[in-house]
Length: 96
Image (cartoon, rainbow, N blue to C red; front, side):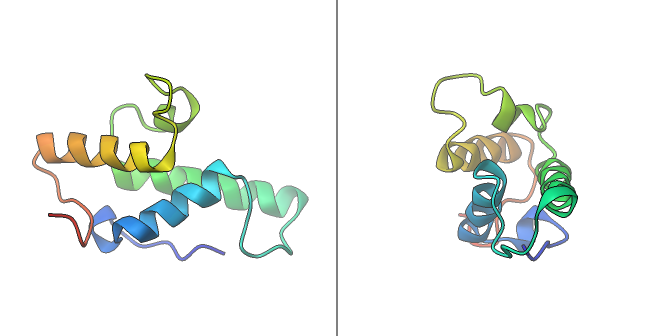
């Protein structure tokens, strides 16, 4: 299972990409999760994503991207970074 961290600035970009990979691919590193357990895990991942990004579009960044290709993990990272930077919010642990 994914190791949740408290805030976005506790993640490196690579770790955040791993979180997105878990969400977007709807899979788990722990293949023993199935059915309701997997569903609860994915809901927890999604809610965690929404909470730490603080972006006004929340889960729509994944579910309803504004432009074709915006749903790609690397593009989501860039959208989140750009918005957080514009708001004066902390970025990833390894962001410049």
